[in-house]
Length: 133
Image 1 (spheres, rainbow, N blue to C red):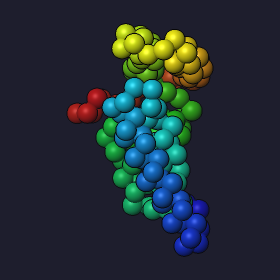
Image 2 (cartoon, rainbow, N blue to C red):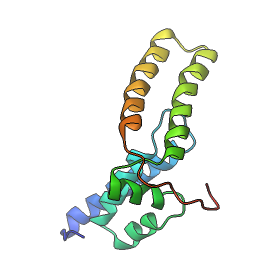
Image 3 (tube, rainbow, N blue to C red):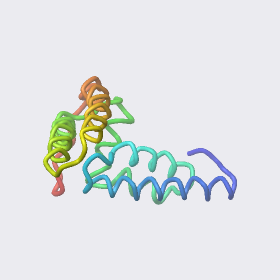
């Protein structure tokens, strides 16, 4: 873990908490990503709070995903399928609720780029089944 001074530690802690909050929001809102925010959180907590870093690494839901990414740069198949399914459904739902065409097209472009990234990541090892999966 990197050594940082008090002000930097506080800033990293705020970044980690903010990012974690966004990641938690992303677990329930479509089009708000979860994984990038959780990865930023674990990075920031490594520089600010060993307790929060350890908690996130050992979290039953996020821990295996983080470790798979850190060790292999990988996203397991189950996570890929869930992410891609949500990415396909989001523009369809947006269209069904009557959003304008430019909103749906913007979603399709952004989600297509995200999907390419996800598909091109190696699968690494499967996320162990937990009571939350």
